[in-house]
Image 1: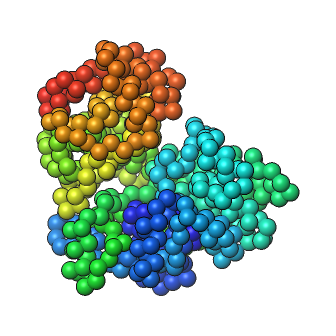
Image 2: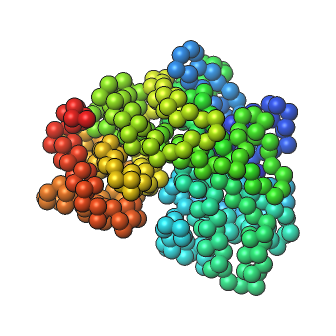
Image 3: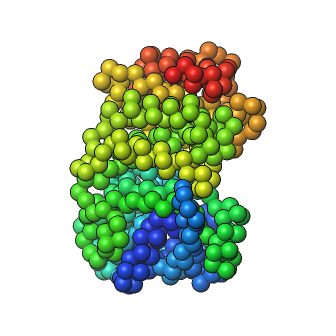
Length: 460
């Protein structure tokens, strides 16, 4: 297997499942792990013979550390993509998994965004974009007659497999040269793009976490990752060739990934974002501390019960109210130390899938999703980069500069909101035309800006 995006989540999730499968006796599956930008992870793994540990921190009880040994090699795409392309073309490789975050796909709606990096990858330079690496690797695989392969997106994107399929085909359709047509035919006939839903809370690793691993294992692990005990992986059963039997160690193979995905995005991810933005603005450093504030917990429950659960149909065997309660219990785990500003990152890339689709559905039903509107307003207020006490916040968002210039304008709140809603790559062309929604978000934004989180939530 090959994995693109060898960050902490991959090491605590896809690699963890493969590790558990090896423990169960299926040891033939190994992973070439590629980081996309920084060489830090690949250097850390190389220095440790590709071994690392997962530190599990339960809500109650002692933590435990587990050594994972399924990574067989590592690479950094920014430094040299050649090992990645060759691995994708290797007939012994049957799957490529990805965790590159929403912005790593460079999607413009359903099409590939033709930014300078994508255009340069199309021109034939060593590819630096994820889609460029995939297509150039598949181009080599075509020439080698290496057989079918599955490309498995594991990012929080609605219909992530379909999105990635469209982006790969978009890039491949623009190929030129003598093997362009055969490459396109190979991708059409021999490459599948199973959709997935992934779930595990994986906070950033701290020095205290590394010290804990050293205490438990007796060695210093610079590549250690931290995770909650809970883990879930739902995968569309769309493989043409061999694959790891992840279902033997708890994964779900199904034809209905979309149902699970919608539940997770709207009940877990949207709620996570609401807690993160309100918590950061209120001065809370961690998700668990924010959720311990009864006003924020109440807002989180109201978001689920009033705005997102009415848009969902539960997959067979899943109780939505119980799922909501489990999510809030997991978020309340103080041992994870999951920072509010980490969850708040890249909101412009996350909100469309997490809440805006549900907002549209509620508006189509004639309802006003009040707490969904509050979530949007809290994100806007967070973009300004200071909490209610005037302390600086770490804002990381690819559209931060553009959004800040819109939000800081000395105009009434509803004009600010309408301007932000004009960022169509986030809000589409329709939401700025919804005057009632604009006014609702503006009222929340003005209250958060002028009175703070505490007074604002007292009006819920």
